[in-house]
Length: 247
Image 1: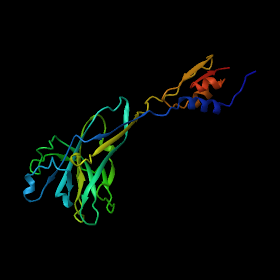
Image 2 (image 1 turned 120 degrees about the vertical axis):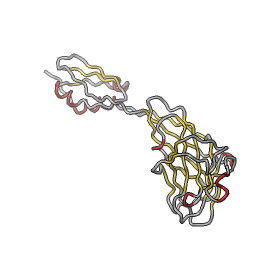
Image 3 (image 1 turned 90 degrees about the vertical axis):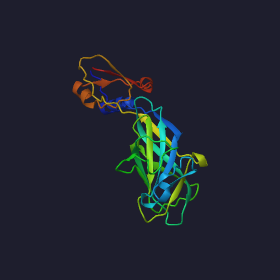
Image 4 (image 1 turned 45 degrees about the horizontal axis):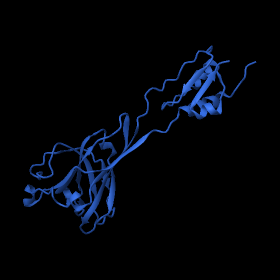
């Protein structure tokens, strides 16, 4: 006489044994490699501000800033879960409070030589993050910008900082010189496995042992097709292993 068990419970136990929490790693806060700003007004077009204690941005992109990070140490097999650029307000002009847009930028540059007239960096078409209009930033306030979509792997990343709206006033963000270093904090997680193929059981098999992996695979149909019942032992399950026996 066959011993019968609830197959849904069996399947749930198997799936539970397969489920594992993804490993996560945090990199940073990573300090900027270099930062500066360029001035598109008057004689400022030839000035270099790489040694300044602030990065200034002004309305209508009359002034814009750059900050670069060297990202290393992303674990093999991991993907980016989040990347946060943190800037500290150095000072601001009178209300209304400014807006700030962060863009991906490509090209090589040197904070000690870059000027408005020598700036050949290429800006992306779409902002990675924005400081919404009306957000109040006073001196020494920090703001986190979500630039996750701009980080993909180890490498050098430059972010362009600018103010597009002409109705707002200028703002200055702190630099390493001011002791308010721009930082980048990255959280990674293990990539989801790509193979989720359900196993095929021989209905005459005497025993199947399944070891836990990072893969979540639904084997309900395979169990039903083979008319398999299971003997579940708490100790075995606690070790994330399940023996399935055909009767």
